[in-house]
Length: 257
Image 1: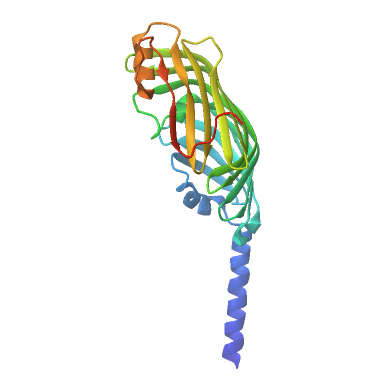
Image 2 (image 1 turned 90 degrees about the vertical axis):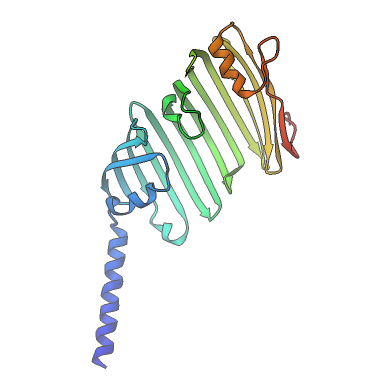
């Protein structure tokens, strides 16, 4: 029976060792595996633990230094629940927010406040020849996502000193304001300019899991080849130089409640 007691003792020691390792899991061990899922970001100079850690340098794949990030993560993540506070601070970006995941496909964000250089938003979703300029900042007091769809959302995002560098030239857009609200699974949003740029922007979006609708127009305030080529990416240019944004797909809700 001695061998049974020895095996039992060995199992107990291993379980205790695993528990201690989990409780004090170094950030440098686990975070690189998590970051692989956050495509486009590189975390360096890791310290602390997975539960209370710091990365001294956060960079995009293109080499833009975003700053320093710190986080606090609840240890009950092993039970399938995630409670995360994250803070990023740097010259090119700032981000603060709290995230909770209590179900496999349900994520809630609260008190999100961010600022980022528009150049950091360049990526697969934007043609490489277009370089956004300016600063994007916003607040998201509430975002309740199920399967990445916003069941509830409040968002107010502003693109300050907005401009785009194009192969044809520099296009100044002024300021752009994006406001979004989602309730009962129906998302409605507006995008408008502040009147100081070379382009008048008026767009309204409505969407649900069954379909979406986009209404509005892009109307140049000046005659400019670079501006014309830029807005032509969104549709045929009409004789007056404007582009209609009328689009829809599926069972689209109305853009107004």
